[in-house]
Amino acid sequence: MRPIPFGKPMLGDAERRAASEVLAGSTLTHGPKVKEFEAAFADFTGAPHAVATSTCMASLHLAYLFLEVGPGDEVLVPAQTHVAMAHAVEACGARPVFVDAEPRTGNIDLDLAEELVTERTRAISVVHYLGLPVDMERVLELARRHDLFVVEDCAIALGARIDDRHVGLHGDIGCFSFYPVKHITTGEGGMVVSTREDVAERVSKQRAFGIDKSVLADRRHTGAYEIDALGLNYRLGEVSAAIGVEQMKRLPEFLERRERNFDLLSESLGQLPDVTVLDSGHQGSRRSSHYCLVALLAPTLAERREWVIDRLKEEGVGTSVYYPRSLPDTRYYRETYGYEPGSCAVATRISSDSIAFPVGPHVEDGEIDEMAQTFESVLEEVAARA
Ligand SMILES: *Cc1c(COP(=O)(O)O)cnc(C)c1O
Image 1: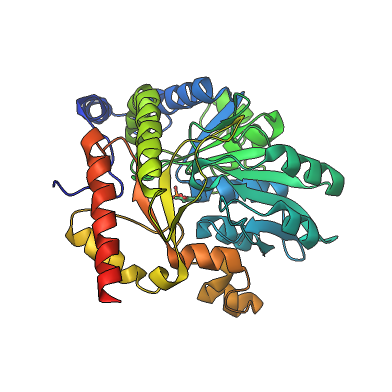
Image 2 (image 1 turned 180 degrees about the horizontal axis):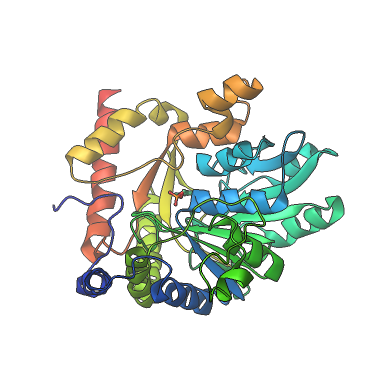
């Protein structure tokens, strides 16, 4: 069996050619490719505004900068997500308040979120975990009642929709990642989408030093330049954007493959004893983007997880853990805010007892079966050793 990595960037001649064409010219930044990438992204998602950034972390930071959260403010953050979201809140001086996950899907538990709202809460942030959209109707209802800003982390949810409306366009702002193992890649890269013009305008400005564009447009004479906001340099370069343009053309095909792989793998692994597959496929009007498949191991089996992961690797099956540590269990957040280990118990259990399997477009038809069979025989080995 050919080794199957957990994630693999799908780059071909089109991407290489597009990157070379940019390199053959002299416009490496502030050029047409970023605009073309943004337009393609807006077209696919239906976003009225799409602004390319350097990473998803940068996009999230720009989201909380827009909101101007700072000391004394609280932001609800899922415990079961990438640390980027909590760090982005923290970088603004505000406090991330962690909300545990629901056990069936790993998405944020909205009953708990409601209980954690205080008069200091300014925003609710959600992650469409594994590509399954969070119930945004409930999030928006909660946000309306408490006057909260809504941030959607869509880093692993490109292609996910609720009633045909793409994720990232339900709340106030949506943030995407083009890190190599995500649905599409530009090496490093990110995007912000929003239905709000004020959000898009401010994000565009703050991603580029806070420079006032109306002055730039009128830069007939050198020195016409104004800075009217705090800003950072979170721009995407032209080479990355050129790769992104090509990746967007292939995205529909990538998503089809992911769905097929997910369905096949889910059917096989769903039949194994002592394994529960998290519900991250389509659920009614909530359409998943099938980022990966997470298998939750029964407690006795979970004690041997590292061994299982190592054996799978030896047999050529690359896996991962999404995410390896519940955020309140990380040393930084424990020490900063005094969280007790396991304070978000569901997130802790998913982090410590699950294995994420690949379903990306690099996994070919027959390989899903091989992967399932390999997993099954490794589990038999564990049982035999017990
Ligand atoms: C990968 C990931 C990020 C970080 O993305 P970068 O582009 O590397 O900053 C943020 N949030 C989630 C949910 C992710 O999976």
